[in-house]
Length: 254
Image 1 (spheres, rainbow, N blue to C red):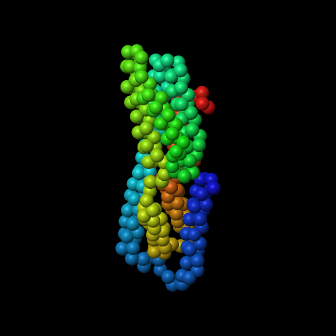
Image 2 (image 1 turned 90 degrees about the horizontal axis):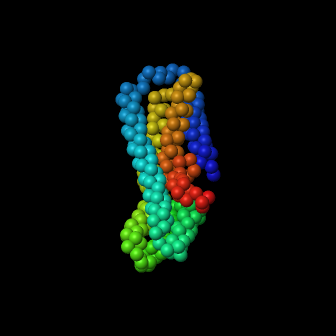
Image 3 (image 1 turned 120 degrees about the horizontal axis):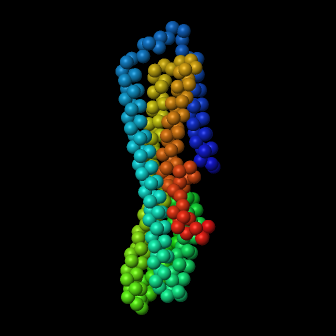
């Protein structure tokens, strides 16, 4: 299902539920009802709960946004290190250089293709990607430099492969959802309580009050959607981490 369709359904459902309850509740109110009798403490508690929930939402959004930024940085580091391996291999003999570059290209093609889809669908990396990285590592470490120039390039190449491995491990850790289920329970329960408190203030059926109630509930639904979308950096389309660093540094792979 499209992310935008999920967002539209969530916001429309939230508005419909709130407005329906308000309309049904209005029919049960007697002619002698006085809205001014709402205790001041209820208004105060409603305000405080709203403020607390707004802080929680802000922290949740900041947390998942930071996680998404970190995931994108891991992708950039991995792509840059692979590019360095491919470039620094220039000093090696043609046969060794071509083998290293071919294996790097194979790894990048796999990461931006099947592995990227696996991260999006299942939140995990593929065993094939790990094997391709091991092949690159063997290409670099198994070669014995024949000249001083090759010897000077050897250790930097080994270090760059280590950077790739570290960035890949970090990318694997950030591939899945990071928000625990208990946090989602708190966010959803808080949304229900915050929106439900509207009715403690004896909301009427005037256009202004219904409009504000609908917009408020739609805003809560939108913020929850943002948290859900950011929570899986590689899994959802609106704000998903991009493979652009790989495509920019290896344009010949398409």
